[in-house]
Image (cartoon, rainbow, N blue to C red):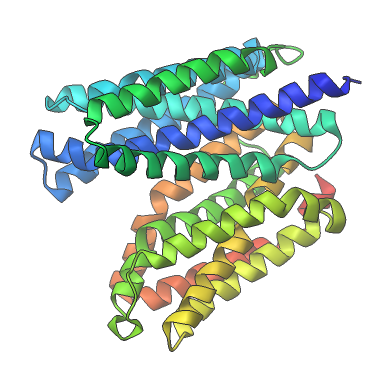
Length: 377
């Protein structure tokens, strides 16, 4: 049993890495318009270029599971942070298309590696602490994203050039990464890594449920504003939908550990799926803006703690090693983010965007139906 100061150090280091990962994602999102301008890309070409990020992440995630099993979380998390942080500055001025593609691919590899490694650490730290912590850890990703997204425009208003903003972010990442070094787990799993392994049994189910949850989150990010834009009678800015969703998700995760301790993971997963499903239905049927925004709030609140519960299940199951299982469901979850916008778009094209949102409502209710897995795994 670890003593309290050691546990606190592990917990704080985990929170810091989640924060830094969210901040790097936010800084990258601020760079996307710059990349488009420098390279002279149209929307279609930019979309193809951005696929490099997803390809890099999908490669980095299973590799990270293998490496964590062999060498522990510390070198993989710090290596991923270092790689992702290092390529941001070149991406702010590159206009050579192959160079951009390589840089974005490496950014994806770094982010995929650090996301997998820190989720493996988070599961292990929660188990050692014997108290729910995963929701709070994931909340720090959202806080880092909000901080990074706010910092760029604020600093730009002061006249600070973009390259210096990115460099300041890089310095912050590297300084904090060195600071959290002692609090990252460096022990390999007994027997080393399992190598590349397809998900098996329960891990397949957990991965598919994670993919659905991420699909719902990605749909709000990519299609929420489009939906509200198609409702001019609401009289609100389209971006309000995602803003309300993100606020609800952050609040849900900040309070999630306490609620899980009181109510248990199966109930939280079940209610979360029902809440998110009801939110999608309310958005579709809402006659005015307040009810539509209430629907987005319900989606965020419902989705907030589903993924942390699924990560906990992946860490506790005995079908596969924890590092391999967490890497597998992270990869399948990311596949949901990648495929989600296209799937929603295809359904919307064939029927309507309202029908696509109702499909998501049904999928979230399916997630709720698997809530007993949170007890059995």
